Image (cartoon, one colour):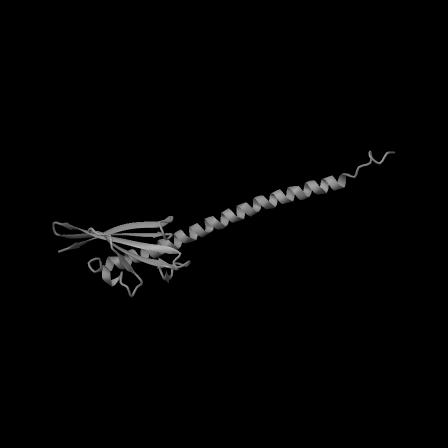
Length: 149
């Protein structure tokens, strides 16, 4: 018998098995990374929604005096926009805790405006939670409250 005719198939099988496991591992790593990214986005949306809803509930108590809620002591800064809409900004950390705007992971923006009606005034607020510098908006909520004269 010639040695060229006697080949050991175990080495070829071993290489194929290693290749299969390497490809499987690569696909699984991509799946886990995608799942992690989706989990972080979902977490950000949930925490942002809780923060925005809490802010709206606090605002409903004092729609005529937003300075009580959106004060410098509370970490808010009023942005000069001109016009009838008042815009307040603050920063939040990874867990939506208050943070310095330069160090913030998220930006919270509150826009306030009012409309005079026949027997009172209609106060509006829109709250957005987004990544700083025009990034992705995670939450945007809007509500209004009518205050009779």
